[in-house]
Image (cartoon, rainbow, N blue to C red; front, side, top):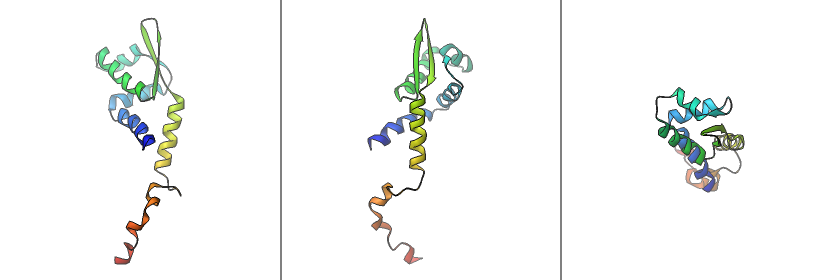
Length: 111
């Protein structure tokens, strides 16, 4: 359950269209907050809020240089998210539904 909760935070962060767009922008490489801000009609404090959420879930990392913060994707987290999404959308022997399949036995018999 803990693993699901961890990744659910990432997907929840991506549930906001502007945050998804920011991640898309960062897929091309590191960007200064000022460059991200130029693309959106939002205040600096609103951008900071979005970036805080993206950083807290581990998807984005920031580094300060002078008065600006530069953001980039955390490639390690991105790889883990891709594997997780692949795992939960693929048929596998150790699937959650395999724990108690007795509930559906005989369902096809009524058809």
